[in-house]
Image 1 (spheres, one colour):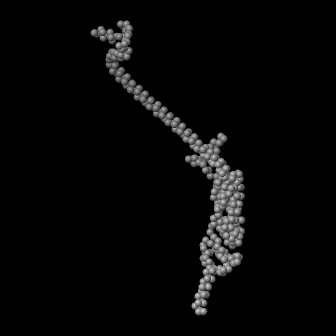
Image 2: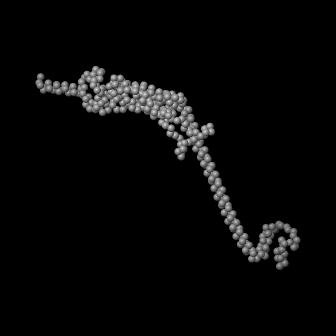
Image 3: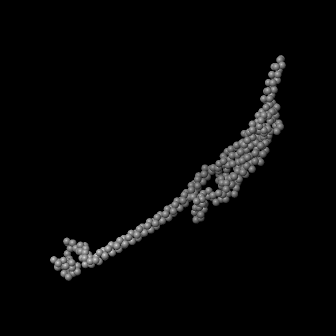
Length: 321
């Protein structure tokens, strides 16, 4: 056999050995090398090219970045015996890949362990507190009027807020933090760190949901009625003000009209007095004629004595004739 052929075979064999022994670790991965099922050496966290014994060594890859866990929605009773559906989610990561490999082996089995541990911790905390503790973070008021003041309603003769007066002691954030702290020690043996736990959704069961909706509708109606009553009060106030202003304007206009009419009558009277004052006999004559006109017509019959003052101008006229 030629030397060149031997060298070619050696080079090919070395290339195959190199390819079989080399493996690449991504920056999002960590690797545990095992030989016949047993861990060999320390876990590899640094990205790059690494080597193992070909054929007999196996590189086991595990994610190094945060992983997502979504829990199944479950029905849980609260401390005040209100049944709700609670859905939680969490973020976790593998911090000890050797323990992880030796206990759960892969992320699928890890998810099953997380289901058991986190769901159990969540149930313990939800059942230990009233519903409002799981829903609200603090005691911030939620219902205000347009001026930012808390809306009060009359209930049994007392002014009360439509928001429950229960004071939040623990709150939703502390409940989720408590779930994480309770679950974390149980995950250490699996090489898992529980980074965060949150409540994704809380829903009432159907029976409770109807009563809650009815109560919410009733509260909204009470608040709406409060606004309506205030609006009616404001409307009556403005209508009263309008009537008052209208009467004031009318009375002032009537007063001004009477003053103007009085001044006009006075002027007319003065002018007539001045005119008739120049010839009183003529004034008497004109007035008498006006009386004749208003009291006598072609159908009138009057019987008077010849010396009556009423006919004096007739007599004077007849005498002059």
